[in-house]
Length: 457
Image (cartoon, rainbow, N blue to C red; front, side, top):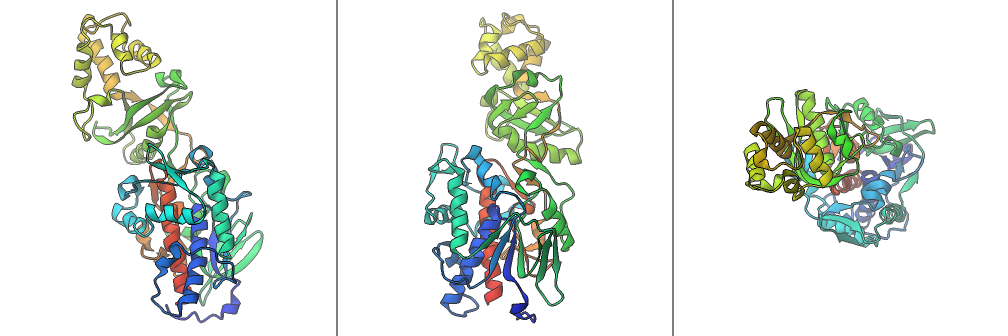
């Protein structure tokens, strides 16, 4: 990188990280650590920056001046509320197929730079032991999200990062000879490089209210046409029977079907009936796919399959004929008794009522049309979804700055030299289970190390 013509004394800091959430703290920590590592190895242009993965305990004067600015009244709110307050740090098996948004190949390039093994090692070095649960999710052994946040904050301080809040950044202005002016109601500072880690629009009380996307636009980036809530509960029509089952949880296949009846995607997991509609892991995972599909196909719909056990293979779905045959196999057994083999009684009775079938009838006593109506509810019950619960209840944002606008080996902007981006501000969103945190750790790691390398080399 060519030498910056502006005198270093013209800058207040070397690295300004906008946002001190998961991605922002990761970026700041690794920018500071890589700065220390590069300064002590020798002035080699091609020093192995991957050593920054495990370097800890920097208490000497920092080689780079790194500041993290956050506009929220409290740091790390998303970390603290994640996983029911336990913080689902990552998942034991992370693949690019677990994400949506930008292309799988682009997402993979970033994920492979900081793997799940790297994540476990990083937190272990911070004194945070992780445990794997049956779902594949990794949590701190303390079952307390404060363990994760406190460790990150301490690592930042030990590395010499100056964390300032609440300091909401409202403008980022490129300077004529390189560098940026970062400003807000609190004043301004000049930085040699800037990392935009401000999040998307989910959980706005945490500070990620969409301003980061506007800052990206002001610096020459585009933002996807649609920016919508992801991992968000869905709202059903006020008169749909799902609302009468509030509090009931069960395993089901939830799928998105196009207006022409084509299967788009599906998830099988626990789901929850609520007073407003549907929630639970399967529904949260499907939410962005339904709402994004509706931007292209307004007639796209949601279906619930309660007999997913009858699927012939992982790629198929339980068919109407499969469900009808399963009902007829009961012979002299009442249809209610048959349904209770797979479903909670409240749901079984509701489905029978919806199909107009008395609970004391056997399958062979029911006329074919009504039996087939019940079979349809069992293998693909349509639910009229009228919306979602919005960014306030969403765990993450779908949409953002496309990865094609970044150099993925560094996370530096192709539109604005010296600007780096990481985390939820980018067009990458993962399914439930720690995948979005892994994206934050990985993209933050790459951005932080690359920022230090660009300044010291």
